[in-house]
Amino acid sequence: MVDREAFGLTAQKPSEMVAGLDEVAKRAEQLEAREEAKRKAGGRMSANVAVKVDEVGSRWKRWVNIGIVAAVTLVLTALALMLYSSSHAKLDPREGNAEAHKMLQALASLASSPSFFTEGETITAEKARERLKEAVEAQYNEVLERIKPKPNGGPFQRPDPGLVKDREWLEKLRSFKDAWGQPFVFEIEGETLKISAIGKKTAAATPPEPVIVPLRKVPAATKKGTQ
Figure 1: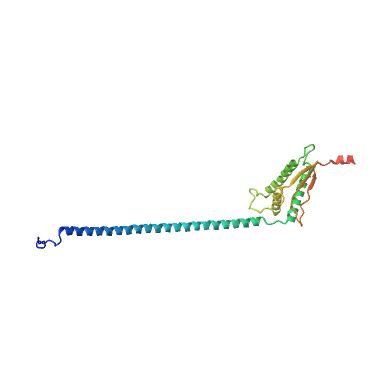
Figure 2: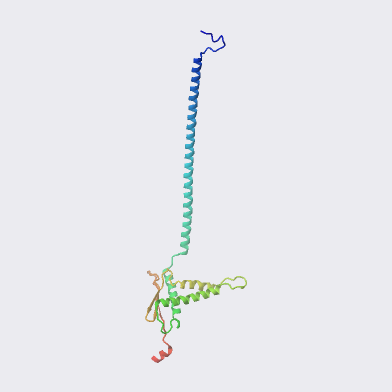
């Protein structure tokens, strides 16, 4: 047997050295495989954590947005109810009926004009209503004209309180409705106009009586001749 050490060679045979290198290489591969598995597992775990964090954040953001919308809706609804309640205060039926009676009397006064219907003109309820509408609108426009500031009229002056009241009254009258928004009823009986208001009927309140207006006046000369 050749003395390998005498020639400065290792005591291991080449075949043994190759086998050792194979073992080292195999261990290195196994170590690298374990490290790769760890890296992959760690990456998946990080990705899972990131996905869960994103899901929780999105869920919280969604609930916060829903809460904000609900709060804004609640506030707007409360404001709308307050405005509605303040502008629709419960009206005493007696006061509403009294106002309707006053409106009927005002319309009857306008309809009693001698020129409301001309001699020989066909009388209908619709015509009577339109004539009254025109008469009320004329008064309303006259009041608006008097309230309107005059050009080059000097410093601004508040409208006369009496004119403001007239305007508010005519705004109600021109609607031809009572305080509850119920339209007045116009009827013709012969040559007589009847205007009614529905009003409100309760134990303490009675709707106003209709007004009756003769639309054609008998001339004074004719009256004397019939006596």
